[in-house]
Image (cartoon, rainbow, N blue to C red; front, side, top):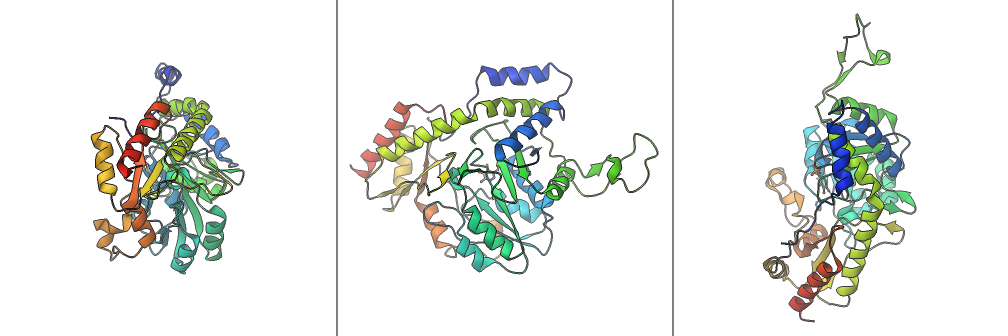
Length: 376
Ligand SMILES: *Cc1c(COP(=O)(O)O)cnc(C)c1O
């Protein structure tokens, strides 16, 4: 089965991990520090990243860093991996959904504007498939209402919008390094921001909430063993072993991006001009790191196309089931029909295989199977 996504690991990645295993540090050491600086540079923030154990942990840590708590509302998209929403609920927030733009599948700034209240603390957009959110419009709407913008960039590290790297567009940006994403540490994630207070709170949170920093201690240290627990935290620390893999993958990331772009173009050309299909759109100013190739079939035959591709060994996926109709949100009163653009997008979507190791012949085979099915 040709998978929809897959990691790209070479001998240099293996060697980078082996080198850490032969050294003194397995957990938080020099590899973590180096990786955090490199992610910060790539993301165009003035500060190093805060690395964590997954994209889910990055979202949870970001909400904690943003100070989200009970009484706050977080506005997000129904077209995402559900952790964008559920991690804010761990901090006690109420989730409010807003609909998406039909072309990119990203949060619609006008829908967000309608959903804003005095309790809105965060607007959480998602770079669906790798296409950056409309960060300028979303920032304006969020900031006008006293809220901050979080960008879930699990799909889009190394993406660019209007010449600015993903990571420098929102108040806080989170990444995932799961194997199917654009670079991997097996499990892993990070958040970036240029707001030092947010990063400090995030670091405390992912480091179990304690500090030895003399400048921050509330009582005088009675010895070098002294520390204080000043806030609630969790252990979300990324180990050196995995950070070293991440650093080595970062050396290859522009190659990954170029290959993903080529595959995207090849699908676009192969599938152009068919009435039953909608191909992913690139807005002016966007230079996406394509994580997915989200094809839409608009003639109601998504299930049949999906089965046709699967039965021919093509490991297609659906991204995503709308989040608001999941039982955990249905119990809170959210209903099918409330977000028609996202619901329709989800009903029509099939993610075709997309990863750097995919060959042109693989792409052509998928294109041919789709064309056969729609009868062109
Ligand atoms: C993958 C993903 C996450 C979660 O990342 P993990 O590393 O799997 O925990 C969050 N949001 C989006 C949009 C994702 O695609």
